[in-house]
Length: 388
Image (cartoon, rainbow, N blue to C red; front, side):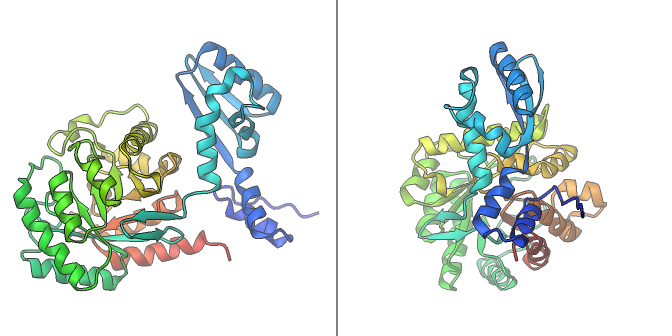
């Protein structure tokens, strides 16, 4: 008899074992995700629901830890799955069925593509977004692209280095940054977007919080709106995204760039950020934006301390559990410097490592300054998670 402890951090180990013993690919994958461990934090429950969970856990073999108004439930996904079915779950736990069903569906069948304006972006491999900041005061590269021609040339280099999209921004969102007038922001970004499109760059994103800027950028050829406010800053922006059928990245941030550092107060950062992102996505859907066009971004460095950023990176799977593709903007952030001691201009290696860690935890879209280094790191990380 041979007994082997398989790697528990990835369903690939179980899938590979089943495939080696004759299982076909799809059944092996479903079985692997079915026995993958799942831990649920359930909050705002009644005493009746709490008691029903304890009783159900005793009968089913799942682990249940509870307190006043909350419960932690842990077990294999397949063991917890009956709670997502109205016909199999205890009647007292009917409220759990819908949210748990969404979590299980996202784990078993994650979205394979991201719908953007005029195209679909496959998510089976890492998607890298190269950054062009046309600003005098961005935290790491402000003032480096002093002309439209320089910005366009930099975009061509980023594409040659291996990115799939270019993100053009004309307003700094570093901590303490002041807003840029709409006309000035448009004057910064539109000529660059037009120039990139003329040079054959098909997929361009506009990094803005403002509806008028987004409209001008989309008219110039942008296909994605990347909004650090998650569509909260300008109420008109959601309507433009919906009407133009653009892709949208909803980022988590509290307050504004000028106030966000004072709002980095969390009991459990990953849980609170995931709940707030779920609310942003639900609001976007209510405003007519199709779910397949939505990507969520946990907002590393925005209203978060260094310690909170590290916890958020480690627990990124909680953000993936919201059910939308996850983008991360880790590039050259302060918390990377806190770990490495490197100044902002020397954090690209740390960025590449952080992106690889984020890929392993479920992120699929990566916004970076140094595309070549990140592409190399993600090529290695994604190779370890691709079935052979």
